[in-house]
Image 1: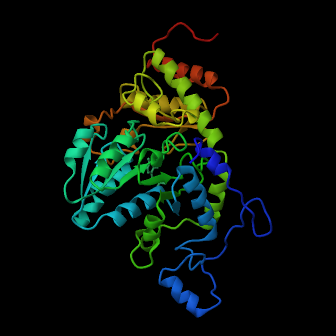
Image 2: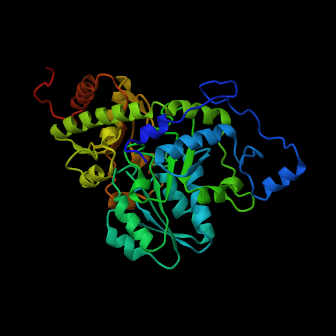
Image 3: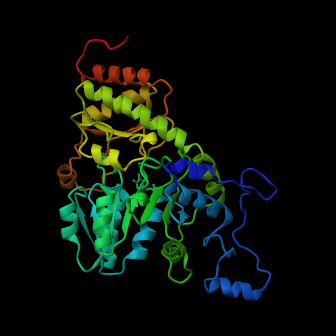
Length: 407
Ligand SMILES: *Cc1c(COP(=O)(O)O)cnc(C)c1O
């Protein structure tokens, strides 16, 4: 694949039904067959070139899947109705009752809850560990282990997984490495580093407009077809199907992803550098103080930067709440979960998106209750934003009054 994943995305050309520059949107749940024999063959698995029923696949979702496969450099991709729809289908496709999963302990709260609580029903056990501790990963493998799971840049602590090293361990043990790349589309291409299955919540950066939920599984043709199998495919049978209208709108939004990612990253880098200089406890993979900085530098596509997510620990939940409310009042962004919007979004993960993780475990992994997660927006004038956030912090005594930085 080319050095720049955005090239592969941009090289796709579409000719709609009437020569439109956007593919026509499929407006059907079911499809006709010219012969009964073809319908039978399609149910037997010979689905090449045939549409059967839109839970199985639809032209609009296939177009979006093709673009996502180009983005991630995989053979193909299946889109789903949410990120969790992709994650749960992959896990249930790979694991049988009684199996074992190795997972990073700092992952999206919903994924954590699914593995920790829901999979109990199937007696599937997950070992949660510090994914940057490669020896611990290797040691945790048992004959029942069916997958190694991580996020390339983790939610919410922004730990950076050494995907190449993890892939080495996975390959040695004949296990698939499943990577949720939601936080770092374009910046990191996990397949280039040896990952086998890539998942995204399209809800975040890839769609970028915070108007719908959607997800994707990118992988080999063999795996993606298995997910769609009418008799045994977790994707097909659990029914997490994206609506065609949404599929078409996400495809259109995706075409500006490279421009947006550069701007999110540039703005986040500016704020992280300056707030760190101000003496705040900032976590951002672009800072040399970040423990995963060199690994990220090593495995990223540099033109897209270190991503739009940053955390600041302001010491206490009261501080965090007061600051978030004040920033929202000053129109600096929204007190909201999710990420990848044009406005900055901020939330305190300990009491929101990661509240599924018990307090003790939160503490152990370094998730303090004064932690604010920022998804930095596409602000045109980030210096102005910086000065305004800083004023909020001074007003709340989170930052001491310092020499004014207005110049
Ligand atoms: C949001 C998110 C998910 C879940 O995606 P939904 O689209 O909300 O189902 C999974 N992983 C990460 C890293 C996320 O941020």
